[in-house]
Image 1 (tube, rainbow, N blue to C red):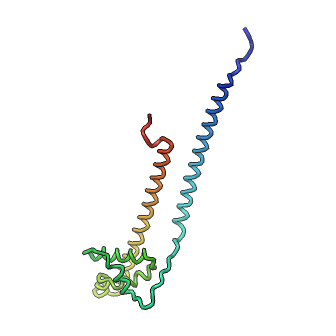
Image 2 (image 1 turned 120 degrees about the vertical axis):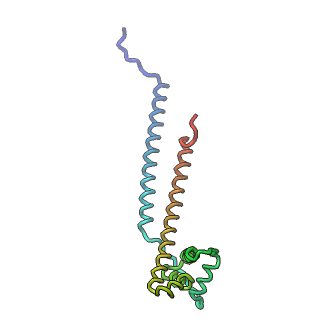
Image 3 (image 1 turned 60 degrees about the horizontal axis):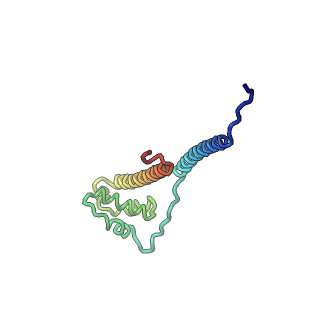
Length: 169
């Protein structure tokens, strides 16, 4: 009997080395993925904490709020007064008007005018602010939903690229 320790073949060493490298690459990929998720979460939190850039819209001289109301309400084909008011407010806000300007534009809405006549100016102003707040909240929710669906599709694509999303053979 010989006391020699068997030496591994060079091909076995290369195979083992290749396997170790593959495991290291996989581990590095997982780390990078986690860092990427944390980075996205951090940026998302920053975006949602910071105030959005305010868009200033100059109202042309001679243009009255009533004309702007007519412009933004002309394509709102709704028989329901509340929907018409909400759509008009959304159009004004999307066009870059501030909430204060949008309130002035909505003061020409028949529903708002009816509230003002029946319940007074304070109630009409409160109703206007509720409408504007509702539109702003809905827009925020819609944007969040778009971001989430975009993130989900990116995750799905990433999984498919790695062979995790499709059927395994």
